[in-house]
Length: 291
Image 1 (cartoon, helix red, strand yellow):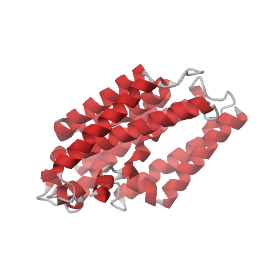
Image 2 (cartoon, one colour):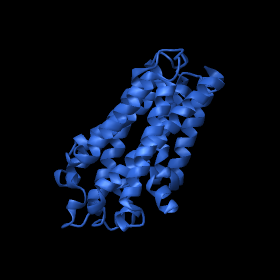
Image 3 (tube, one colour):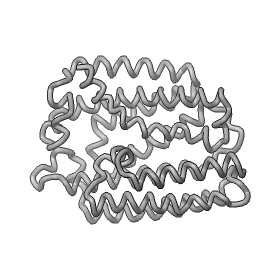
């Protein structure tokens, strides 16, 4: 049961919460120990809270998951993790994480509580509404970035471009995930996710084209127009890595028929890992060595 519980907490998806650390890196406080420890505390708080949400979501989806070819193997859907145990752990994780959030910052508590409530609403109703389901996911990423800002004493103006880029990138990944799910769904099995009934492959391809193009433009504008980037425009060097990562994910979704779990691709696709690693190294060098 312990293994089943850990699996249901989806530790691999904790990578999404790395967006909490964006403020720490882009405000150039990565080498400031108090700020680093505070941001790491915020990161793990979001990790525990997101695991609580995953448990509740799996309980809500238990019947639909049992009809899905792979999700039926999830611990709750397969019966390896009893529903009462899953709900009890979810409540404990929520109490611990929200208490920690209040200790870190009142604003951070407000953001994490908003994240929790919105995700409960998402699990119960909003995930069944086409378009709104992906928009809610994107908003969750924005809240992560905002949470990272709220626990720090920001030394420089935190660029609104980063919120825009976060929103667009999350929409891109969300629509890519829906496309992968729809492409793999049996013709008579769209009820495994009700929102899929409101999508078509051509519609999702258009939406992906719109948000991917917007992401590239927004990030490019950020690299030379944001108030906290180096004045020498060195951040523009990172644009090719972002371009390749966006193109690679699109290739994986449309050619490899992958993308149903973007966080899984991040952990297994080597070219994607390399492009993200090179982007991260470039950002660190530009902000901390040349800025």
